[in-house]
Length: 251
Image (cartoon, rainbow, N blue to C red; front, side, top):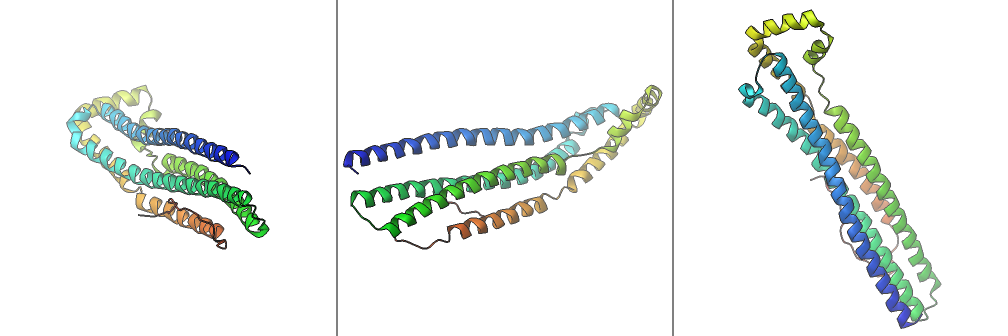
């Protein structure tokens, strides 16, 4: 293979690397925006539920600002714990993908060097090809894992952070006369009633075990890491490789 072809190959690989880096930045931006939007929607949903409860009890939410803010803040903290762990999963999986792609390019360059030097070491060439297939499989496995994690995260946010209010259910089931009677009653006792409702919401939020959810995510990550490490357990053939990350950590 001529030096000109060699130079053109390096140029093409550099262009691929730059294009992939640009695509990765765009994908990361979309990922962050959509994931954070899910979290914001959950927080807004809770806020609006408390607002409806306050209106039903003939109360102004601002009059109970501290109690409402405490519930919202606690709920938000638990949501962000899960989101932060999911973000770590995303970053680490992307690191694994980029590492595999980088090592694949190094393999291509090493293979070209053997050809340029008229090196007929078939065993070494086969080893390079085998490693490149391994890197492709790691990328495929990582992409599938991220898709799986994304679906799990969305399901977790939807199900584990869903707050079912008994009082709102009662409101929806009331007829016109029952609502009128409740409104008159709430004019005199609405403040006390709303405080009791806030206590119920506070209990619902407290019952969300975000630590357990995060622990489940981390255990799942450890299992995936073990699979990737096992895949990487190939014999050293003396070729230079780089490591740019790919470490998964719970903390």
